[in-house]
Image 1 (tube, helix red, strand yellow):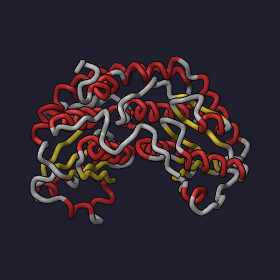
Image 2 (cartoon, rainbow, N blue to C red):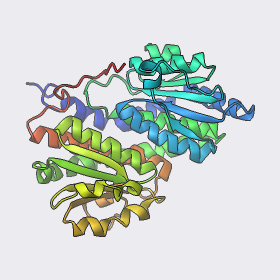
Image 3 (cartoon, rainbow, N blue to C red):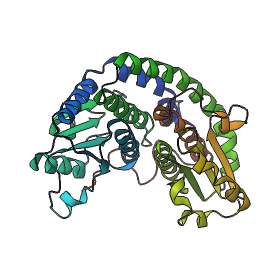
Amino acid sequence: MTEWTAPGALMRREIAEQPDRWLDLLADRRAVDEAGRFTAELRAAGRLTGLVFAARGSSDHASIYGQYLAQWLLGVPAAMATPSMATVYGRHVHDPKSCLVAVSQSGASPDLLATVESARTSGSPTIAFTNDPDSPLARAADLHVPLAAGPERSVAATKTYTAELLALHLWLRAAAGEPSSLVDEEIFALAERGREVVRRSAELAPGLAERLVGAERAVLIGRAFGAATAREGALKLMETSSIAASGWSAADVKHGPLAAVTPGTPVFCFLGERAGRESVEALLPGLRARRADVTVVGVDAARPGLAGILPADVPDALLPVLSIVPLQSLALELSVRKGFDPDRPEGLTKVTHTT
């Protein structure tokens, strides 16, 4: 066994390289700027009544982030597509004035391809974000934005997920007409902060993994932009460590998920973003009263561990790019301690052909 074939070696390397991949995306932003201009022109001409995101898995969580960001920046409705309409029911239900945005690491999922083709049949404009410019999805859409993440060999998506977040962010900021110089400055600062978050996550994750190695389930809670992080963090724990994890918006927790929290249940609360933070904080007394094993992931430098792992000077809209990193590292370390290989989870493949 070499350092590159040891369980988790690929995931470990891909987590660590994320800040560099964000700068790669920034270095060649022609495609994302073109997509921004395309969207802005549709909007100015009165031909953009909304956005519809189509995705699966980690890309679906990135799209939830995009959904929030689009509504906040552009003030247009944004929804999630139901690919089964095209593949199962054979229905074309797209509004010609809604732009279909497909997000996929591989660009090879048949149901996403069918959704793009259905949208084009209906006269809807289409944009695809993938990590493979030669993929079927990239070729099918009107415009393609490459993620520039490089080959991702671990089955567990890490660098492609954060690249999707950042690509969606750059596109929507461009569509909103924000100066690229301002955005670039923020992304350079993000990469610098990201290196520190990656380093600290790698240091803290082994101890946290030891504490949680016997856990069979976990609950992750965020709000607004943080809801996407909660869902993606839960997926990382599920796919790498066979934990029955679920991610929720704080607004939904009292509608049933709270009942899954029993004494000792690991609960992760994301308290980085300013907007929505109060609703997550309001859950803490109840969680502790239920004797949950609560871990706060936030920006409070005065508190130890993950509570202060995130920088306080990163804008809310960019914080999800950083807040998922501690959960990526935890999933890696927990998987290895449980005797699994997060690079090759049993029963999973890198490209999922959903029809």
